[in-house]
Image (cartoon, rainbow, N blue to C red; front, top):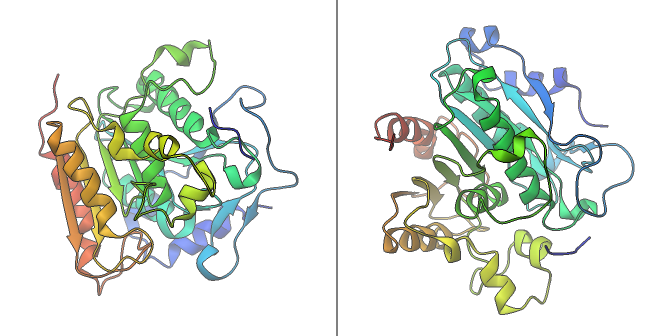
Length: 315
């Protein structure tokens, strides 16, 4: 384990989502519910002081930070398709971009029958151990799988989706689900934390040069890490033939996580014999969420849905 160091009301977030031209089906969809990840205080050292915060301007608009209570927001569809997705918004492990990334994706998936779990995880920049977000993601996956029947989902159709740093978190959960990050003994801990599929959007993959400029790298392994730490927390290190099927999306002009990240992971997964697919769009920059109507990359949700629903899973 590595040692480092007033949220908007739901109505305000819904108002923000309304700007995405909510459909009639979305308006009738179930409101989200929240599930706490841990009984009592979460494991690990540190933590923030004061209430949760939500960004009100610039790139941080709608992003949550100062998180002391890790939890999931559950979006139940009107017509479940039996599949579930846990979403990890990005933000460099110093905030979580809900408004622009995770919530729009959650609503899109909810409208199409997916049961969605938007993960609000602890952040190293809030004073938690750097391992805290990874422990939260593992715990969340175990709860989802343990309660599959309650949610009307199949326990073997539970995947992860992550954006940027959230892509790093989702990928680490997918490729290192058995890494012991905390001690637990309740009923949820008997379930596997391994996702059945992974969708990674402009993910942070490598913490090594030449990809050593991300906030993710600084928050997780510090300013002057060892090469062993860089390797241990880079996703491509943990590629294996047993990795869950993975689809990766990137844009060629991304100034923060260049497509080299996605290419590195794709090549590592294919070299090990894992199922992987990579899509690189001509432009779009970073942090595009669902994308806008004038961008070709706004096709990615449909590509993901087709990739997932047409593939054959091992029974």
